[in-house]
Every structure is written in C-alpha cells, then in structure tokens.
Length: 363
Image (tube, rainbow, N blue to C red; front, side, top):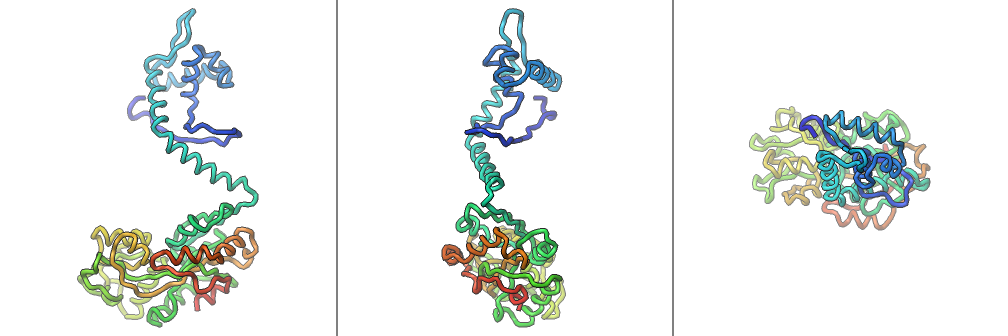
C-alpha cells in the first residue's frame, strides 16, 4: 500500500452461523484468496456466492485505488495473482495468524455482549456513578449473567442529576458517615447535595461502606496527619473535579475554616478519579490527595484514614419494580456480596441495604 494513503479500519458482522471464524474478514482478501485457490474469477465468484460482474468490478476498483495490478492471466491459462497481489495476501494472512488469539477473545466478548441483547431474561442497567472500586468487584464476582451494569463514571452530583433527568435509572453517590468528619463540614456537604436534588421520592440502596483519607508517599515521610496539613505551603495537593463527592469534602472544609482556595497549594490541579490521584502521588507530581484506602493499598502508597463513607445507589421510586432493578436489589442482599466487600482493603458491607428514602441517606 502507498505509505500515507491507506489505513486499516476494523469492522464486524452479525451472522447466523454455527461457528464464526477467528478472522477479521475483508472482501478484497477473500476475493484474492478465492482467485488464488480456484484459478479464475468466475470460479472464485461461485465459491464466494457472488456474481462474476461484482467480483470483476471490485477487483478493478481496488486496482484503480492502489494504482497497481492485482490479477493477471493469459489466454488459455489460469488467472493468478501479481507479485503485489501475492504480497498483499501474504501480509493479511501473516497478520491474521499473529493476531488470532486476540481476535478470538474480541469476538467472544462481542458475542457475549450481543447475547444479552437477544436474551429476553437479561437486563442492562445504565448507571451514572461516582468512581468506586467495589463497582468493578460487583460486576466481576457477584453480578449474574442476566444483569449487566453499564457504568458511566461522573461526580456524585452529576450522577444524581442524570437520574433526575431520566438519563439513567441508577445513580451512584457517597456521603460521609455521621460523626467521622467535623459536624459543620459534613452538614455543609449534605446541604449542597440536597440543594442539587429537585425531585421528590428518590430511593437509595445501600451498596458499600468505604474508608476515605489522605493518600501519601510510602511511609508518610512528610508526616501528614489531617486536613489541616493541606494548608501547609510545603505540601503539593492533587484535587478532584467540581461535582465529585470527594471534592465537596475539601470545599466544605475550606468554607468552614474560612479559607480560600489559594490556601491549598495545588487546589486547581485536578485528576478525574481516585486511581489518578494515587498515581499523581506515586509519580511525585503531588505529595498528598484525598482518596480511597483501597486505591492507596493497590499502589503500595501510604494512607492516613480520616472518615468512612456510605456509598449508595439511587433509583426513582417508579423503577423499584422494574426487572433489572429488582435483580440488582436481590444481588445486593446476597452473602456473597457482603463477603466480597469484606475482602477489599478499606471496605465493609453497607450498614443498610435499603431501599430507603434518599433524603434519609442524606441525614
């Protein structure tokens, strides 16, 4: 192919077949292979179930595109591939053979996904949620084959807004446990979350309890102990975006202390997830960030526990009897789920499984 003029685009088809080949099929290479094996365009067309005119026209179109011949034949002799045509077919076969395991895995993943669409007993639940490690564990260990959580990560406030706007049926958000944070800080945070809600009657399902704190370097060489240390000029902080529940904690703390954003060095340095915050600390781009104990443990970082949070899954009241949400509620009540949470660093089963009025979760 002329360098700079041709690029590879992948595509797939849904077909009724007892067993699909572990190949990324391309019409040109199917035609070249058939011509090579059968020795004529007419025989190749019959093999492929196509008309002679179609195969001939497509080959000529590709020759015009490449500005090179693909097929040659002489009177009384079989059609054969040109050297360029042979090299093209070799390159395709070589690539297919090397990528066969990955192609097979990709096809299997796609078939499983489409299997859900054709299974009348299966349910897909779009979920807008604040990022949480336990969501991935739920999908891997507890979620049944008939229930699939289609996760779309966002801040807690954005997730609740998506639920109220009927963009998703489930929203994940988190609230600090009463008594762990200074009362004025938690009260201000909860008031902001309540103010963001316009609808009435939303329900909350208890999902997990998790530990939040300060993610620091291994061994905590800077001796960071509390939120008050963030105002030290010697520390470089990494923040979360506006709308994230973890960001609300920092903003609420600043407000109750009468401090401006400038009091924290790095306040405007934002990362989109707990994992990204931990990575910023691990690579030395920041000294400290507020995040999950599980994320710090996964990366071998230090951790200063500050407060626990309840992570909730909010639903609209008219959705409680929907099959997908009913299946979700049933899975959250399983002992397997409580056991899975207990095995995760910094996690514990939810104090209440619900459903309860969401406003009660924000008490």
